[in-house]
Image 1 (cartoon, rainbow, N blue to C red):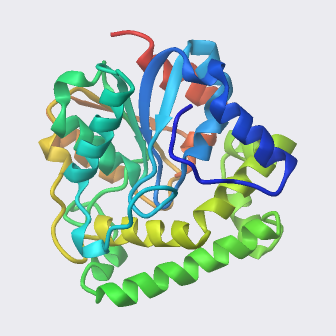
Image 2: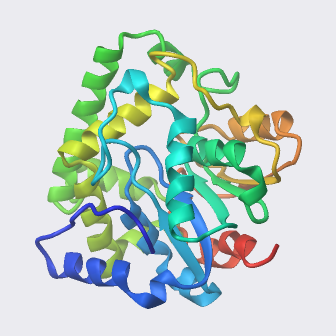
Length: 300
């Protein structure tokens, strides 16, 4: 798996993560570019390790502006297509011409940007998991539409408070009230993933990175962009011309499944699969990811 350095450190698990990221076996196979959710980082890709190795896939996660070694960008200047150009330059330097394309939550918008910028380079269908929608989507919850009208500084402050709460929960191993609620609200397969010793530590390390100082900034930027607080997004799902498959859980409390069905109506080549019991963390259902989602990238 490839990605910009975030520098997880301080535990044996972090050392194991570093070895996995640099392991030749994780850098072989058909390339798949993945964009993680709001404020997410590439360590979430390690949850998919077993499926990637089984199906001979190489996962490439790229840090968005403001995280890791990327150059910070003020929220007012965030631009999805500019970031798509950066990713394409990276792929060119890696000598990757064709690639699979996947996004989760807020990352789906960035996946759409890459699909709009270089549709001829995407191999097969673009995969969107629990896709976050812009406030222009009529199915978006009214609370998010209200946030769209708040001053950017106030939205950023609220985002920083949430990040601090999640960061404290990660430091406590998600054994506090927030962490217990998060785990309780997952489906059984998703809960099993983060409850195993390795999964629990990987989840903790990933969240600590997400909630570090630059991580909180990245999450706030994602939120301001997806809420279109400063300006309308330069990319919309309606702009996508390549085939798309959307996987959405009927227990997703973050994004209603009506948003997914709306996407089917506005994208000309879009299929939607609603998974019973799955939540917004559908990415953590390892059996589903290995047996259903990742095989999309094994054939043209």
